[in-house]
Length: 129
Ligand code: HEC
Image 1 (cartoon, rainbow, N blue to C red):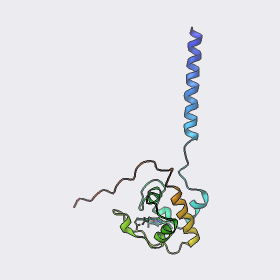
Image 2 (image 1 turned 45 degrees about the vertical axis):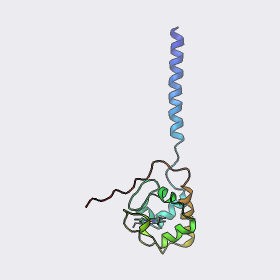
Image 3 (image 1 turned 180 degrees about the vertical axis):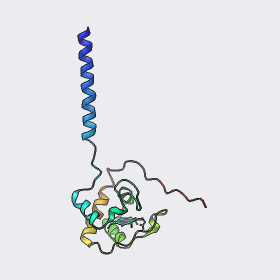
């Protein structure tokens, strides 16, 4: 009897340990691919944007929810339309980003749309005056 109980307990412990290891291994990395990360850094986008959380600008994941075309995102990088993001300050026009780089970033932003929809974007709080 005792032996059986011991075996069950060990099996249970092993199962728990295994589950934890899997949970850690299965986490998707929040970082963009190295090439994109480098572009975002070079063009200082990361000063104001993060993938999952609002900083000065909206999270890229939330931009993806707008379902823009890649071309439209490129256009918005060069000529921001602050009216699209009430409650945010206006983005500076990033006109010195080469078109090719802007397009790569745009494609990557749109790739965040489907899978990375964790946690809803909070509507900007209305200021009480
Ligand atoms: C000085 C801060 C700042 C920098 C630097 C910055 N952004 Fe923004 N971005 C914002 C803010 C604030 C908004 C929301 C208001 C707006 O669109 O003007 C925004 C909005 C956006 C949007 C959504 C546009 C829309 O109309 O929906 C995209 C896409 C974007 N940024 C991409 C970029 C990329 C790519 C870079 C780097 C090349 C970059 N941003 C650099 C602050 C910044």
